[in-house]
Structures are given as structure tokens and as C-alpha cells.
Length: 593
Image 1 (cartoon, rainbow, N blue to C red):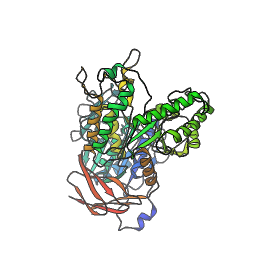
Image 2: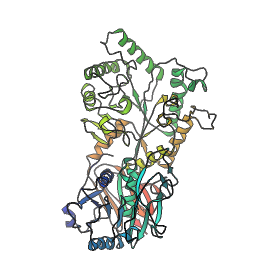
Image 3: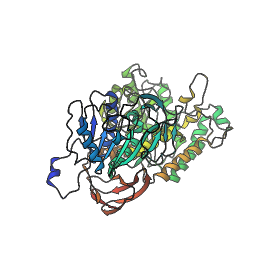
Image 4: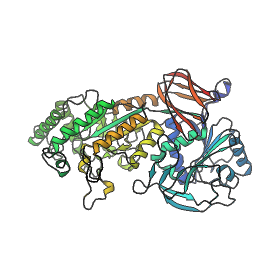
């Protein structure tokens, strides 16, 4: 979701005593804690996307705590709590006992807060380095039982070494590292709640959704805006025309060459899957894979590229009319300074691509762009917006990559070119292994969206000498439909199961094209949203219709009293998570106990 930060409650709240209190959290940070600031940045992005208001208090500047009465939870994003004396610590503890919550987003220790955190030791525990995630409870939908070790993803912790009696016995350990050490726990404390992370791992963007769900848990009763859409991008289709007969295809389809496979079984199966699950695809097309053909339009090489482009679309026809065909580049050059030696030649390639699209692509000019290799630099993004101004969306990468290469982008305006809106992809490939599962589940937990991409030729990218298997797209040498000699299903069968898991687990996700998604997000980003939570109900007032997560505690339930309707619910640790479909205006959901 695009970010719209609300940093403080409005003064007008005090003049409306009959209204339910506006939902807001207090975030503690310390300007001298660089790791903590990374955790806070991720926290504020999660809260902003959810349209949850917050106030930030920097303990390096101000140590006086504000009145707690307007906050639903305290979020601690620093390990430097030395400035909190006994009196402030008791105030926090009393506030939680009275029914509020604390979410500790980075391991921290304070001698006066040990009983609150579940760390009764009177001395600060030593630190140790460890790895991995082992989810022992349903912190977010469908994460319980998920185990991620170093072979899948480097989740790194600097954590406390705990005594055998720590955390306290009444603490529920919800997450461990790969060696079984406690990483996160939760507990009831008086009438309130504490969620403690014994790690600094929550600075990782990939865990943003897990972080948000932890904050909602600490709040007890809460609402969060979500996007409610899914996108599936297919990069490099229609593919190049090739008569090559790689072994990866011949072992299953001995009579087909590359083009015969991609325009035949591959396309047929993907369209069948689309039909069965009401999917929408966004297809991304390279104009000419012959990167040297950049001469004038009447150049023989350019004309040959145009002829091949027309042939590619003829063999792909008909693609569904309500799918999107987007731009993947004139050639497959990486749109960076290293990938394009001469910016002027890149501009000329875009100008030629525009003419080729108008003459040979059976849809209007593209409105979205996936950069080849998922990388781009400022000058190239600006050229895209200038030469093909119909393009208003760029779809790169969200949770991985280097920002200076156009990767690791947030949803929202492209920082190098505000004429473009970033709709980054967060998940990839055909298989739902632990790495893909945490990407999927955390993104849905945080923003209620799934942005996915794959390539037709992923099947060809198998391990080979000198290449780390971690970096190939078909590391287990899987076939397309058939089971391989190692007993592993074909890639299509795996992706079929992947899609079925998503559509069954999250039936409220609506499959859309990239351009449709970015249009909806821009509209919602500009809308005013007011979330209020009282003891009897959750109230949502939104200028735009949207979906929302609603969370209540164990023993509570929700029913619609006005406006919106409840479309899904799922048991999570400490309570129940609902999805509400709300029209514009006011929606009210009654809390029953």
C-alpha cells in the first residue's frame, strides 16, 4: 500500500467526547540507535500503509512521556531505554495493567521493566548471534509451522542469551530461531498485553507484515486498511522465436522446440489455470531481443525485428482481452548506466519501440513498465516517462535488491520520476517453498496484497558448473507437468498448488492487472481514512471503499452494525482477524463478548 503517515491525533478529538477514540499508537525511538531507527522506519511504513495514526517520541531529544490515555499501544523501537527512570517505567507498567498494550520491536532491557517484558533478571543479559525463523504460533494467517533456515533466507538475530527460567512461565513463545532459542513471546499483563521480540530482525522489510500483526496483537482491538488485490506478472512474453531444443524441454516434450513449448503447452496450461481461478495476468513484452538492431525503421535488421515481433504475437494470440500487455523494454538491456553505455541510444530504442508497438502490438500503448532485470537508473526512468508518457506504473522489486539500482522500492511515487508510480513485485517463481511462503504471507499480513512475477523460461534455468544453485530459477531440475526422477512435481503442478493455496486461504483477494492496481492505490492514497476503536465497536470512516483488517481478542467477536460487511475471519494468536469490505462513508462493527 502507498504510505500516508499520520503523526499525531487532531485537536478536534477533544471536542467530540461522544465519538469513539481515534486509533493511535505511541512509538518510542532514540536518535542515537541506528539499528533501532531501521526497525522504526519499517514500523512507520507498516503503520502508514495501514492508516494507523502514530506519534513518535525520540528519547534522545525528549524524555518526558506524554499522557497515555489516547494511545492504544506503545511500540518500542530502541534498545536505549536508559533514560526511562523508575517513575516512567511504573507509569508504562500501570498503563498496560489497565488494559493497553506494548509491542517491543527490538530486544531491549531495563531494570524497572523486566517484570513487564518477562525478563526478571536484575542484570542485562549477554548478547549472541543466531539465525533462522521457526514460527510456533499463528502470528499472522498461515505462518504457524513455517521454518526458515539459512538455506532459504538469512534472517539474522542479535538476541539476548536467556536463563532457563526466561522468559517467565506465563509467556507464550511464538517464534524461535533455527536452534530453538526464543525470539518472540507474548503474554497477558493485568488487563493488557505485551509482545516482545528478542531480536533486531524486524528491520527487514520482508517481515513488515509480521511486524504489523504483532502491533495489532498488542493493541488488542484494532483496525488496519489493506489493499485486497493480487497481481501476477509474466515477464518476457511473448518470448523470442527459437528453434533450440534444450534438454529441459525434450525430456518431457521430445517433439517440441523452445517456441513450440512456450506457445504450446506452457501457454495453454497457464491460460487454463487463469480460467479456473479467475486470475488476471499482466504480460510484459520486449520489442526486439536482438539488442543490436537499433538503426532507423527502414534498416533491414530493424525490419526483421518487426517481422519477428508480429510473428510472436500471432503465435500467442489470442491473449485474454481483460489482461494487460505491458512494456519490458525495446531490447532486454538493463536500464542502468552499466547496462546502457549510451543514454542517447536508449532513447532512440524507446522511440523505435513506440513505433513498433503502434504497428505490431494488438493493444493500445502500454501503461506499465517492468524494467529488464528489475533494475533501472533515474535517467532511464525519466526517458520512459518522456518517450512513452502513457506509462504511469513501474513494477520492480519490493523486499530485495539495491535502492540505487531501482530495486527495494516502496509502493508509491517513484523517487526518481514522480510521473511513475511504483507497484513493486514481492514474490516470484512457480514454487511455494519457505522463502516464497514468508514473502507471500508477510506481504498479505501487512498490506493485504500479493504481487508476484514469473518467467516462461524459468524451467530452463537449472544448476550448472560455476553457478550457485541458490541463484537459479529451477534449482531442482523440475519438469513442467511430470514428476522428475527425484519425485518432485512439475513446475506447473507446483504453481497450480501455489495459486490454489492463495485463493483458498485468502478468498477476498481480487486479481487485477498492474495498471488497475496502481490506479486503485493512488485513489485510496489520496482519500481520508479515520479509524476509531471503542469498547463496544470499531468505526471506519473512509472517502473510498476498501478492505480493512479488524482484530479482536480471544473471547470477542464482531458483527456488522452499519455499512460494511465481514467477508472472512481467521483465528490468530490472541484473538481473531477479520476482513471487512467497507463502502465509502461510515461503517460500524459491533464487538460482542
